[in-house]
Length: 222
Image 1 (cartoon, one colour):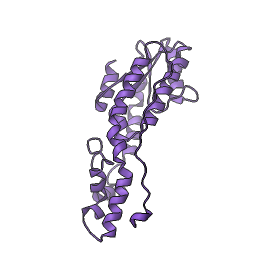
Image 2: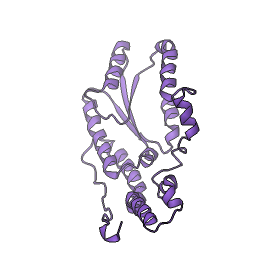
Image 3: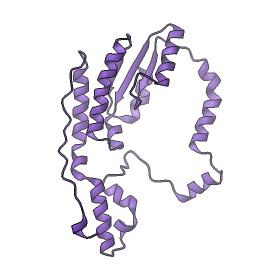
Image 4: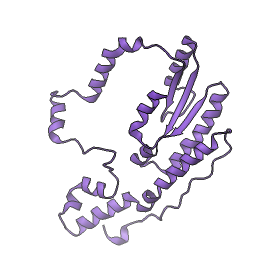
């Protein structure tokens, strides 16, 4: 594509605004999380990987150079940080895809469904402890939330309190290339949810864990 036809975006200068009023004891938690996430997005905003990728591919084709930049999408994506190998393994090879298509290997969803079926009886016998915990992830709402409803009903049936939690994971935001605006939206939503749940005497605990792989074990240990 000729240089005159390319449209380049102006460098982003977006910064996350300061939080609105929040319940006592929570503003520092949200502010610390917002600061951590904002710092991790500085290099991401400056690099503009999508524009760089498009320009690199176009220049390569225009020049007629049949090199790695033109023929290896993964190489370009890894070099520009679009695919982050510290979070994602290499793409599945053709041989493994063929094994799935030929039913030589069970698909991950089939393994999950089979495991859920095989463990249903044992899981139904697990005794409720001192509380029922609902782990908020991306579904940040208190209305029309099936998981939250089931957790609430379970707590009522067993006569124990319902406790909610949310884990702020900077590595998850980085792995999914989450924009600062999206992170800020989630943190503000958490402040509102915390207030709504408090009116029902349901606590919402929010904390930051740097190592995303350690989150499940941390929750079990709580």
